[in-house]
Length: 279
Image (tube, rainbow, N blue to C red):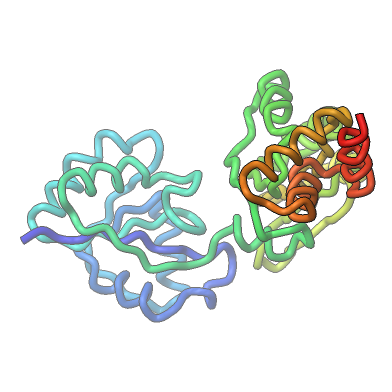
């Protein structure tokens, strides 16, 4: 009978964000695979939790060598709790390799949901949250970082990035250069901690602020690109409407569909149809 792998959401800063389920799993897990043993002991102390399971370090430099032992324990029926320093494991943190290996081995993988810097930053950013994408950490080198922003220049969803404090000013400067000085953004620093700070403004404004120096854990939220109207000639617009009508739409519905798809004003589309009929 195989065991189970439990992904535990660790607090971003406030131990009180941990619910009773994570406390219970910490106390009963056979193995605790953790990114940092010091963080584990501090969290256990803050929560008043006593754990008896075996503690194994599991961070980027030792992931591959730890996998066989953890999989063996899971196959033998152990409950393995995976904890990273903050937030959910495998989200720009160690964990994906173990999750994938456990799934491939037929091991039950479950979670005790907890805080996430991604969704927390989105919620307080003041930017649209109905559609978003998470881009993880930005490249360290300036050229690669600008290339990443260039690839996202037309992304209309709100974007979330992780960035180190000592690279934040450069990242914001590059983002402003590529995406535009006036693109709305928010820098979320030390989320849920004593010195939590949310800075909202344009990329240019935030870059100027960050140039003075920033400390702490950083989550950067950047607004998506504005929708751009599709530029079509009157003849092309009339042809689009005709195609909609050929599919069974009424003239009115066909014009509405083309307006929504292209972003062109209704009067422009209507006039194009009238001109086409009169030619």
